[in-house]
Image: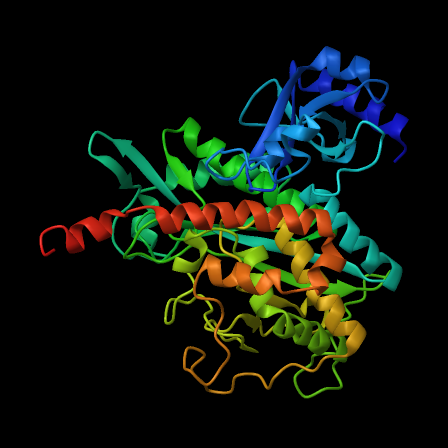
Length: 446
């Protein structure tokens, strides 16, 4: 659709849904959703002839909102404003916020060039390589999350016990299911199934797959919309990877397959014993080759690594297997048009643009170099010492990524330098922080 056609289409949406406010959103390098609010009439007036400014300093902030002056141009560069240009294809009304519409914007420098460190641009850069190779990417993120009630005694889980898929327990929190499924369906997110998970207050809501950039865009919308919908009915949702010590971690598994221009599934090959094509195996080989450096990109927080523990249904080793939920990569049993892999490494706190870009980059390297993966798990325990371990902490993962040259080339040096600086700042703060565990463990005995 031409830009002018998009503007006419949006004008119609604004009239039909009585939109009075437009929210321009984007995901920053610390995985924080940022937005500017614009009166609908003003949004329609400026179109592409004007610009909406965005302070570049926000991309120099880590998760504590502390400014890391080594990110970007720093104070010597004055932290100039960038410009947000709307992606009209992402425009849509928010059914749970009457009168408000939302769309995603892309960041540009004052001279009109893209901001190279923006996560959405980084993903576009990798997807362009796939387009050149004749590949289309099809997939979806599969988020788990926790929902709490805020009480005088602190956060209480929305339901208690370990009632995974329990109909009785789920019926007690149907308000949550109905609100989420209704809101997500009306905004076009395509929710498929929802259920309680294996942790008190933990949920999973899966959605239909999308193509290319939309995979990450919808994941971004999904996560923020779930938090907003639950906030409106007095629940607090969190996408931390491990919010509760003795409960399950929350993942954001990515289901992926590659297709040609005719939407033919390129991961499928009925002539092989396992139904997987060479392309699929090489894609897995790329994941295994880059597994340890992938961690710092798809598991970007200190908390991420408290999920990646043995016997937790999260991966802790560089493995793959058929229908194996202890492996880093699981191959579901579906074949033919539904052949896909499930990448189980990302936690719920992953940045969907960065993680998808990194996983696709590793997969493309495997395809180009025809890298064969290790043998799949066959009635084997993925958590034993027989397999290469994944990094134990964010610090260990960052050390591996700093030594890497591949991702600098594929994702861009400016982005990778900023990513390392921001994540290192978080790791350094964590290492110097005295935790409650330390006080409880040592205060009275030393």
